Length: 186
Image 1: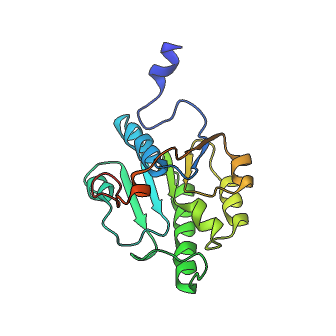
Image 2: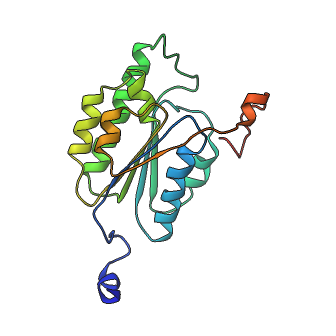
């Protein structure tokens, strides 16, 4: 087995790429995906992150990611939050662009890992069609790892995934009035 692992180049995964879903109402979904991305980068793998509904907001990880080799990202959406009861057409258009960018990156075979951050919410709030996400998963090249994050993961995505983690909120400082903290929560 050691000889087999030694034959694997730094830019190749030693196993088939899987589909992972991080969902639930607890904190840590994006953090888990970024942790995998960081680990992968440490092994010379190539990572692309597509941010759904996160637009131009200054998320801390994007600043450092832009300085690292072998990682790229694309942001779609607006700085303001989407109102699920009043989704605007331009928000749907941004989500559609994000899905198209994800497909292009995934099918390019330039990346070992593709992270679709907040795609589960985009599906739940009808910014993107679940059938298009299912098709994306079905078209995934065998060696590409695909990670989907966000609350409200559709049961069909959970069924298709190889790994599903449901982040359960036990306690959160927001419940006591502590707002999101720069460098910790974003």
